[in-house]
Picture 1 (cartoon, rainbow, N blue to C red):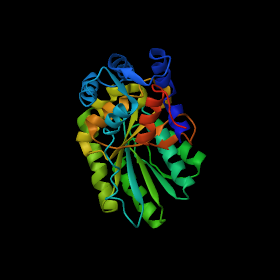
Picture 2: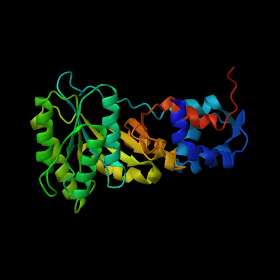
Picture 3: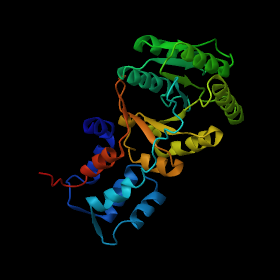
Length: 295
């Protein structure tokens, strides 16, 4: 797994190496600040990190590790996941964040676990979104419920869940529109989809997952806050982490939203969506700064 995280952070680690060509036992705070800023950790957050570090001019790996790990305290909420019937996940995010591809990767992950999956194409705002999801469903060999562009997305969500219950499907993944004519329209549509999901199957959707584009760095925080205010988010998936040197932005996102990161996308293939592990994420960054004394 370490290799996967390292692959996802390759550009971030490359940027760190440019600032710090040789690894150290202890790092000066001025240099550490430069590295954290370059990784796209917001300055206010760096100030907070430094507040919790020892007052000395130089700090070691363990001091920093302890502070950085404390930001990832938010657990995946499983209290709403049913023991019987399908697990329904509603996927949210703006167009271009990699929503459709992530849905396909998530479905592929579940299939690898031996689970059955049904997709719901409830982004009826764009014909391209329906076609793209249908294409992915064919590629990975899962079912899909869809309708014509412009039809009621809530009806698609209802039909998808009803079909999944009838066929005893394990996982339902429902796509949603990334934007409508304005934010009020989008908020109203998403709220309606949530209500209808609950009518189709009490307690659904069990997880509302927001897809954020990793290349946007901390600038994606505002859209994340907006979606969270609309319907409440349960977890985040960061896409395109391998395509950015802004790998530190995850600290800012978690700090702002107080939500768990569930998965990270680290490449184009269907196997490149991996469960997020905070320990490995923090250690991979710190291992690029500090000399290892293991063994």
